[in-house]
Length: 381
Ligand SMILES: *Cc1c(COP(=O)(O)O)cnc(C)c1O
View 1 (cartoon, rainbow, N blue to C red):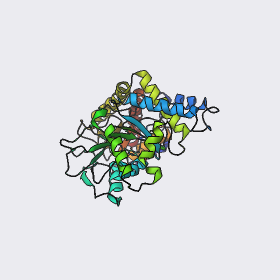
View 2 (cartoon, rainbow, N blue to C red):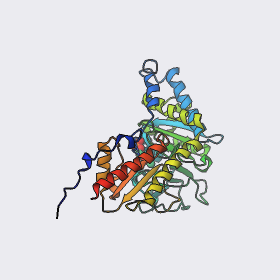
View 3 (cartoon, protein in one colour):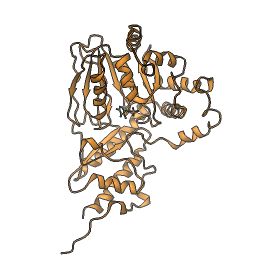
View 4 (cartoon, rainbow, N blue to C red):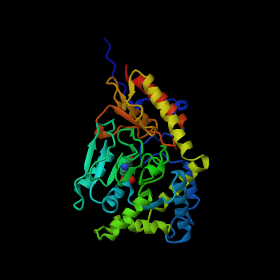
């Protein structure tokens, strides 16, 4: 019997004709369009390195705010608010400025559980109410006595589960806070069904990190103003009243990353100029149909999320059976310039995770599936 040495994943060469035009499939930071970076380079001397308190930068901030309101279909009276520190900072800020006493959370993966950790440790809040769902599923959103803020992600990036944005029945004037970091601009929703739709722009919006942006309802603004007037101590950096006041003047409380602001405005304009949210979500839909269709037809791969109603259209999680290691596939892809397809570590599954945000070409997802097939054929002998 001849014993053949196993093929080392990083020695597998994928034919050039089979490769995607762009090899970035990460779930965040995600692929941004080279033309957006080029547009930034074109502003290297009159925008970058200039004061964020002066009209040149404030005009870009104003353009970004208007573009976000347009993209997300902001109802009358809703406002776009911005601050520094990404979605993680927004959780801390919300614990001071949006949650009055007690929050209720849906916890279904890494990111939704991190917000729970924030409110559970905040000394000025009551212990949160938490409904935990197994990885790959989503618990129902139900009204909870005494909850004044309902918190859940639009898309749980770690597991590839998407939720419908809505309010629980009988919520009694509570706010609905939706983490849209891996959803904003890629998934359809009705903004009137939540009060703060917040996100960092380096995932679904294919920009860079460091910023948080929130579309806020009049009820959210009223809550911010009331809690601010109540005398609750709040660190200035996390003070949503300061963020609101500065955003209304097209500024941030402290210095933002100007490149992030510019790249986000660039991406929002690109989507709006092509038809808006429906167009962008349509691109992710095509990518998702390709990826899941391929996995379902495969005898070795399968979609991790079994309920198709909550299977994410922007972050695809694909399980492999034990004939092949997903880590080996990911290593072989990386050796060929296709990066960041690894599953989320803490899930502990034999899995790849694929970012299918609007900036990704659906034809590149098609090419990716061919590349994975090519690798699998060589890994299982
Ligand atoms: C990545 C991510 C975050 C954290 O974003 P940061 O900008 O790193 O703070 C929060 N929520 C979701 C759903 C994410 O995917």
